[in-house]
Amino acid sequence: MRTVSACTLEYAEVPRPKVATDEAVVQIEHVTLCGTDLHIFEDDYTSELPLIQGHELSGTVVEVADDVAGVAVGDRVAVDPLIACGECATCRKGRGHVCPNLMVFGCYCDGGFVEYLSVSADRLHRIPDGLPTELGAVAEPTAISLESVTRGRAAPGETALVLGCGPIGALATLALHDLGATVIAADTVPDRLDLVREFGASHTLLVDAASRFPTAQLAEVLRDDSSDGPDLVIEATGVPASLANALDVVAPGGRVVQVGISTRPTGFPLKVIPFKEVELLGSRNSQGLIPEALKLIARHQDTVRSLLTHRFAVNELDQAFATMRATDQRVGKVLIDMPAKVQV
Ligand SMILES: [Zn+2]
Ligand SMILES: [Zn+2]
Image (cartoon, rainbow, N blue to C red; front, side, top):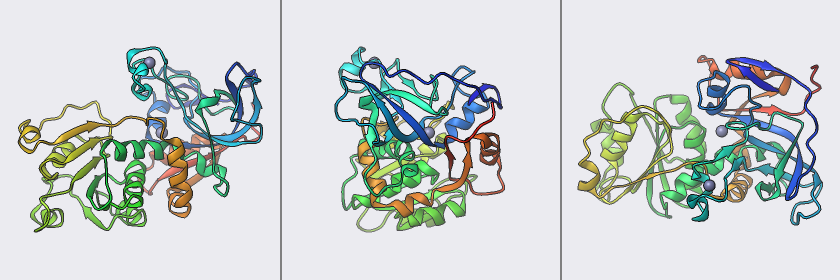
């Protein structure tokens, strides 16, 4: 399946890839969709169309190159979709997830809406026994959430505020709760707050997007006699005003992690960063956290499954994107089953 132009899909026969040196061929079984997929589908992204989409992938290894060790035919795997160049100064420092030449399956090069994908074996991660293959597809967004928590150096006993309770914010809440932090989560949508309580938020704040945050009532939740604010704020909305709020409410000396993405400029008074000695940290993709993500999902299978609100076969992909655009229902992660018997 490829997206040939804005909102137009085409199904086509493509040759089965030949396994190359260092690679293994994966039969893709499940793909989950995120906001990036919808932007690509609508041609509102930096990638070039036509493109075979799909970057949150899981499946089973069906062929392995002779020189590959550690991956075997029959292994159920999650696919790390990042392809760093491996040669630039950033890669040489071990930070390939922010490589300036980074390719991502399904975003900047053809991805996972295919029956078979040949992948460098070091990008495949075994799905733990007892964890269904379909939940392995969620390892990629979970790793993005884990990266934000790792960048923020979250520690047990700390208080963290998560701004935005979409899948990335909900999975960050889960990761924070799992490591023993107290989590306050905020969103503008009441349904999302119900969900994030299941993910471990002990307090939730319904934020009015139109008014300044925090109001006096919200400030009471965020500050008390023992605290001048959360030690860590994860900004997962990408709304510039939300970053300003994060800097306002974080405790002096605290950390703010920006994981939400936007091309819009920010407009807050700069002095809050030096006056409070705030550490403002960016977070993108993940630095090898898919194995840890799979373990986190395995520990909280039922919770993570509750993120999957819709399920379609690959030949219903049009319908899946239409569902993601609809505003009349809550859409969490959309799961696509592969392969379907597709008429081409
Ligand atoms: Zn994604
Ligand atoms: Zn590089």
